[in-house]
Image 1 (cartoon, one colour):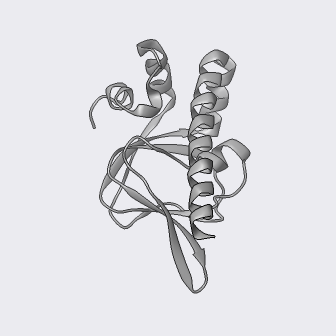
Image 2 (cartoon, one colour; image 1 turned 180 degrees about the vertical axis):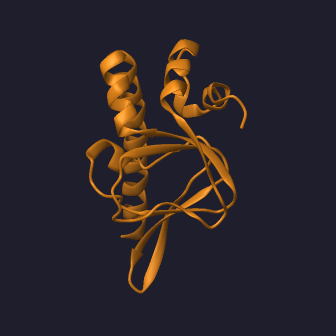
Length: 148
């Protein structure tokens, strides 16, 4: 994989983070590859990490027996798993790779370490996550209204 810092620097999510901040974040992240068809996260499993795709796409699915509903198709750069990462609850959906993917993962443990060492950067990361959550909530609200 290319330099992680360069990869995340190009993501919309990390716009506004300085080179120094990206270097600090890179040190807390691990790279991860997921093969086409494999599950990144499964609904109801314990969730303690967040993933950003560098290359590839995922479907985020919700199962309601006997059917499944695709609730989101991700693009590179989007965070995945942010709800469980933030609230400590089990995963709310299943995430399946649509193609071979590469990305970076930040565990809650590594985030807590970052928060102790660099609270301003941890706060900045949380604010960026809150913007994504706000955007997704507004998007889901619109979809709900369109279905009514």
